[in-house]
Length: 204
Ligand SMILES: N[C@@H](CCC(=O)N[C@@H](CS)C(=O)NCC(=O)O)C(=O)O
Image 1 (cartoon, rainbow, N blue to C red):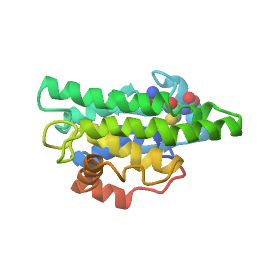
Image 2 (image 1 turned 135 degrees about the vertical axis):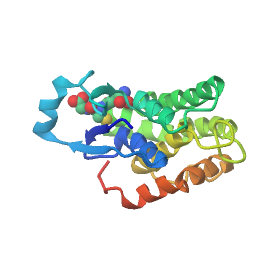
Image 3 (image 1 turned 90 degrees about the vertical axis):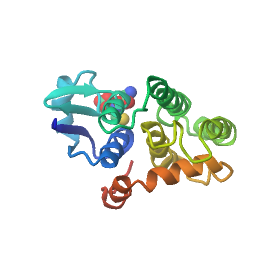
Image 4 (image 1 turned 120 degrees about the horizontal axis):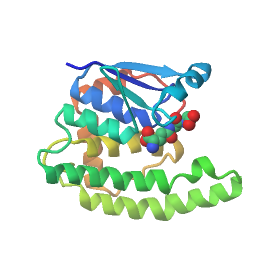
């Protein structure tokens, strides 16, 4: 069994997704959380100057989705066929568009008034229409791919449970039956349920 060391900041952020997958698969890993000077010393040694990084037997991988895909393959949650794997990638890339592109103003917009306007548009228009799309992509049993949990479901959960709940709390999924089932399927996975109870509290 390879040794895994996941390094990120003292936050859930974009690394929580990997932690959830490790929990789902019951894989042992070292959960390293750096800050300040420690990060400044580590940064030049990372492949792209950013965290998270995952070291697998000492080999370093960055980019949270590449890390997630690798763990998903290891734990049998990447899709059972090439087509299922592509569908899981499709969901993951779609979620990245929603968060990476359409929510980037949360970090980049300095003008508070403009930020409020963009937030309003995101909550009232962009998010509901994206959720309507994702609702149709999820099955009535609450899976984006096939009939069992994949990393696409975990990614959706991670996004809602983390990023969206923190920045724009609210019952955004109240009209989305299938998506609520996805949330339930992920949170009731035994490894994930345990991690959700014991994980450290962080600001982000
Ligand atoms: N696309 C990358 C984004 C990684 C990223 O933005 N990392 C930020 C923290 S969330 C970072 O390392 N910031 C510190 C820095 O750039 O010095 C991923 O998904 O892993």
